[in-house]
Length: 176
Image (cartoon, rainbow, N blue to C red; front, side, top):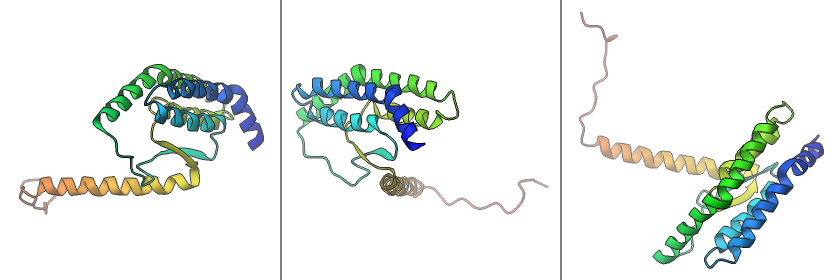
């Protein structure tokens, strides 16, 4: 069954979408400052060929740090990211959404549709994504969620520091 699903994925869209990713990588690889987009597109092309058992996780969730950059380099990266999103990003995302809707029409196609929707979310802004095993992807995501929750609680406790503590109500809320 796994072989059949992987073959269907490759034949029904995996190969074509991988070619789109590689075309974007070739174009942005020639643009000064486009190397991060090109690297991300090549990595996503590999995920597009065979997405089962693998997932994309942002480098920040993996504990990685960005390389030091200058403000000009950050602006160039943002501009190239917007150009990517307006050209290949939206095209790939729309392609994955259509393929996902078509695959989801049958029960057997639901896993394929789920993979299409996963890739549709990544396509507009692939920079910083790293492809890892699905088993390994859950741990960094859980750790990142715990850290975000802790930061939110800390911010909330800082806001509540100036307010008086709420008194718990003892009754059912009815006045007598």
